[in-house]
Image 1: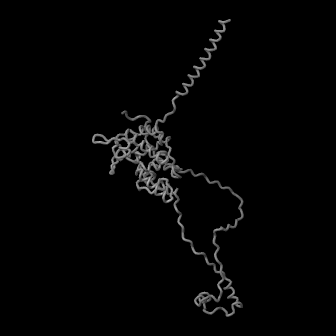
Image 2: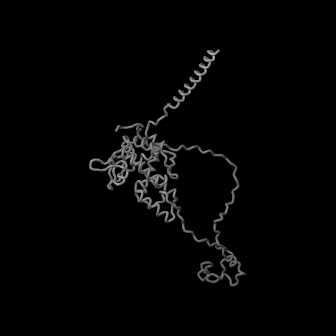
Image 3: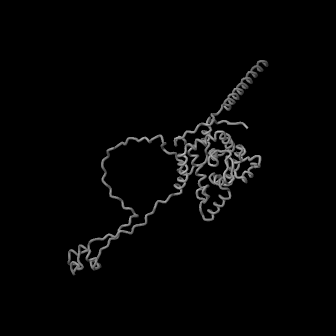
Length: 348
């Protein structure tokens, strides 16, 4: 009996091990199945946009330049006529004052204009039918006209206009957008990769369009240089070496890492508010902090749209938001950007 029990035990163990190996193989196959990867870097940028768009500015238009809206035929339904309702009186309507003009209150000029003579129709007003009719006439004195109040722009409208201004500007210059996207071709993948590693909004990859039009050797009259337009002092703060032989502000990889580090620090300083962080990237943290302090002292709001910032900074953030909207919905504006492969363009 013992050999038989050993054989049965061996069969049971072998079956159990086979089931475990099959399950592990199936699990390995499931996890090793490659996920669908974006082939176009622009698709990846669009799917990775995280910044909240303010108010109604980012609502896509319903039609494009090439498409005309479809007009549905009007369906006429014959309904029985309803009796006209009397218009309801508004509780805000000021009723006109009604006064009776006594005959004895007329001046000589008034009598002449009213009756054609300076003499009243009769000396006894109560016995004169003409005078009675004149006295009985009601003269309506209309209330004084209120000053015309123009419709004030709300904060929503003001913000919409500030962004829409830049959307309209870029719509009129499609050639410029095509040019900067071609300049971005060698660098976009690397920038998107670095932003993805830090889990940052991928619309930040559009920031070099605002800063340098994707020209890696761009230099401003104020001394900023490179794709991300670092000032010398800020570049030093973030480890970008600058000497006679080399300026790392012009190094794509080094400046991109420094810019991401800088933007992350600003975002942390402003407690996750990307609009304030971007404003500080443009005009400096000190300028934004001073504007916030000024508003707090005056009991005002301290969001980006409420701050008194330099003119350039007032346009800086709306310009990036406008670009983000356009690149998120290029077909709505009749634009089609050439695809850029979602893979490295060059090797270091």
